[in-house]
Length: 168
Image (cartoon, rainbow, N blue to C red; front, side, top):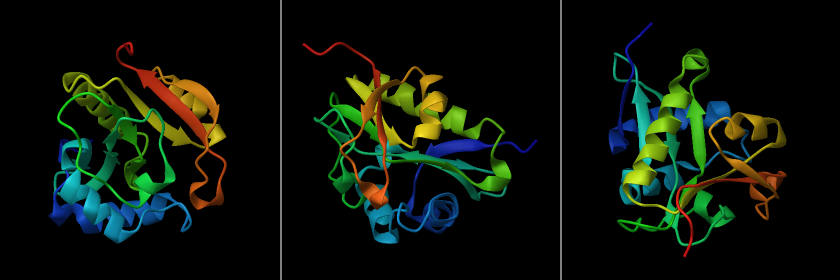
């Protein structure tokens, strides 16, 4: 098995990220190149990538930090800089190249992402997913909060949250 390394996203990763984004997601669900570039530039501290031994991007997890509890559609298109601490960490994309799926890369990305959120004292981690992925995220401790208000890509999504600390 190849050695996989993990790091924050850089602009040089954009082509690899977009290849996976357009491979793993339908055209109506995939984020645009411009949106991904903006995320790398503005929220690279919550944009982790996995590289194979040749330096090729084989997976990533990304999303902004906001005061609100749930993912909103605008987050797939536009990102503001993350606050240094607190807030809710969102996941707007978790993807692994098909040739590297089943090797624990998504699990490691999630583990590192959640650990990072804890270190920055985030209140929780939130994401949206299709109904067939609810059980997958529940294995990480996420709780299904029901059908999301998100209508990204014309799909039905479910809000999932992982509380990291109690709200005051």
